[in-house]
Length: 517
Image 1 (cartoon, rainbow, N blue to C red):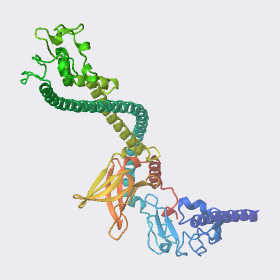
Image 2: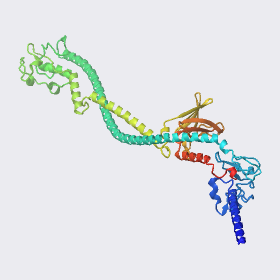
Image 3: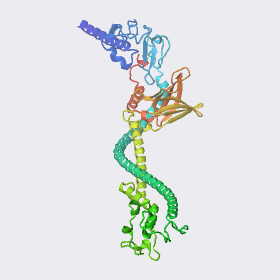
Image 4: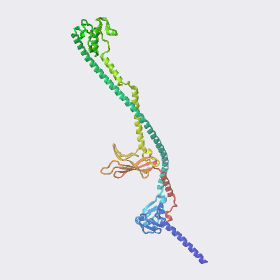
């Protein structure tokens, strides 16, 4: 009986010792492994990260380097390329080179790197992490407020985009209608201009004809005066013509009436017509056929033939007087009738209507140009990528500046970036794209450097309550890097990550506490 009891007690001791050893071995085997990598080491057969070999789980942290990259020895100094992960609960975790493990120096604030017991390292993470925790708290507060601002700006951006799209649609419809109106007004305007040009040319032609008629009248007047004087001398007329020789002959006494073929046999009336024909250019019967005394002589008396207008004769002395229209008036009347017949003189244009059409055309053309310019501007704007939630929409028409030393740096998202020194401007690049999941902006193809590449700028975004451009540097020749804080980059996912990190720093029950090892 006593033997059985002793055997039972011995078995319990062995079992407890095995459990304690197994637990301690498990803890030690995962030393130096980051929490996010623990699942990688749970399988019985583990592959080296570089894929070169495989090793059994019992070979993990056995102080013998099986993998060239140190995958199998995260908690020892056996592999020259190994990395040891310090949990540092209450402070920030750190990765050390494996050569610092059990080297007699406390590198981790939780003392986990000196687990062989040669050196006693106190856990100073809580005290050392106070500044870090305070900074993290402040950062979380900024993120919380920034997330609220970002939500408002995203909502406003979505409304602005919808409004601009609606405006663009209306502008396109208005452009279509206005284009038709401008086309009609242009056709009407051109019609008016053609009519005005036709009227102008007709007036010029009329003026030229007037001048030509006046010149011709003067020439015929001179010829008629010369011919009348010659005829009077040849036919025995008075050597002294009357003072007003242009209109009448006052004295025709002494003219023979023997009916000969010459003008001497003409009656006084016929002589008057002959003289008048010399003025008007018309032919009388005596110029076409022979003068017949029997036909045209009415008995030699002074009676006026029937049908003869009293207004053309002076009954008192028998002298014929020419009172008809002048040659110039006849030519003008004939030309006017001819032009009207062939529609050279259309109805006069309404000047007020013509001016109104011109003004309407100019106003409509200006309005159409403004609409087309606005359409082009909106189309260019809306083609850009403004982020997953259109959060960067309001940055399209904004520029951000910062002054460093003698330079002023200017960044205009979706357009360009520049460096200004006085009146000299150097282009750092044209807008290219977002990078790193909208975490940075890239500007490229700026002004070339002397014997170097074209300038470029990368703007890294950080969470901030105001949008500010800061810390512009040139880490490589002609390659600039700047930081920009903005509420747009205060992401909810990042806020949750920071809150989890702070929570883990306060959790002293996590593995890695030096005293527990």
